Length: 587
Image 1 (cartoon, helix red, strand yellow):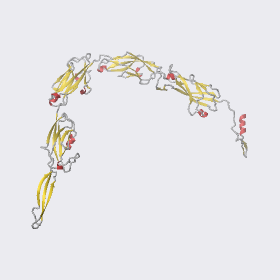
Image 2 (cartoon, one colour):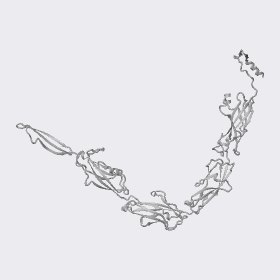
Image 3 (tube, helix red, strand yellow):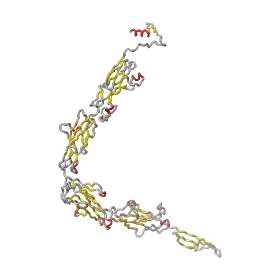
Image 4 (cartoon, one colour):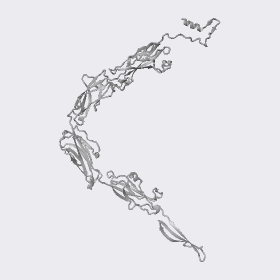
């Protein structure tokens, strides 16, 4: 074989689809004469390596300007980086740098494939006017939605400065403040009750009679916009009694002063508005704010409280619960403000019991309530005064009224037996209707509430020996007269069957009276006064013995009639049951 200098021949070099393409011809020669050869065509594709990082145009610094009122999601810039590699190595993804995402990720975002920089939240020039953002471009990230950064990826970074432009989006803000040093001592502090933007009013208080030109309030106006958008003009409308005057040398401050002497009898309240308009470059974008102001003219304390009635008469049932509302008195004071605020107190009438121990009064509402449960038998009436006092700072004024409180009798007592336990004796074998004795109870109420009846008689307990002896669940064999309380038998008694009856007796309130409107329906010392309510006592009825039974032999009996004799060596003892019985009978 011969040594050939050019065994390989490059036939063609081309670039197809981003890949370097070479076609080679390989020739093989033999050593014969003449030599013979063979040719092999070889195609070689040269693959690209990621040796170029993405490049932003210029110095990779961009400035984006955006109005503060653009909607969320607005694209404010589109970043575009180039990569000289091909294919997968040239696929670029965009994102905020980690530091930028941490600081401003809630405000801005970048779409990974398009490089669009957009807003995630509303911008506000007054809060921040400029943002410095860093955006990275990374190659070898794939084209899918779930593109991942390859270990061999290369990155470059661009600086984006976002400048927020002011628009006239803030109306002038009006604030009203009181200058207490210029106010009368009777004037209260200024209170901002609600947000001015909801058309509620600032409330001021000014003493009656202040002269023309009196400083009423200090007004400040602020517009958060800049430049011409932050300029404004103000005026007072809907009143002839007040005006605004500049407070030099402060262009954003004014003083609210009176134009005439204030007279409460002519006008107690003055309501008007302070209107401020800004002056933007675009006249169509003018914004206006309105602050409503209500001035109350504070009256001097020249009126005393006056009650609706000079005398009050009322009646309350005795034993009403402590805290029961008895009456609400009311007084009116024509003054306003603190001079018209009334408080109430009690004052005992001459030669009458101390009212403070019997009743109380709410100092604000005038509600009079009971401190005790009244007892008509000991205190049939109470007379006292109620004094109303206004809250005038210098000289409080007072008014008074008299209250006559009568205590009405009610059915508030239960019958009470004279004795807790009664004892009676009755002979056995007496006919039904035989008198046993009588019980007595009293009701301390007055007529007609002292009526009651002797209602029932029953065994003291369910395990009574008499119930056991008779083997019956019948009631005791006695009757209790509902009017007199007399106890009589309902059947002939047998001492040998039951010698002692232990019973309980009950006296109850008359059903007719217990349903009366004058009957107290509450639980007191004796429980609820209602139909069936009453008191009880116990009684022991002894049945005396009479000779109404013959002797009977226990021994001998038929089938058991033997006599036993016991004989001893020392003496003989004979025991005969019959002899013993005969001795007893002879005795």
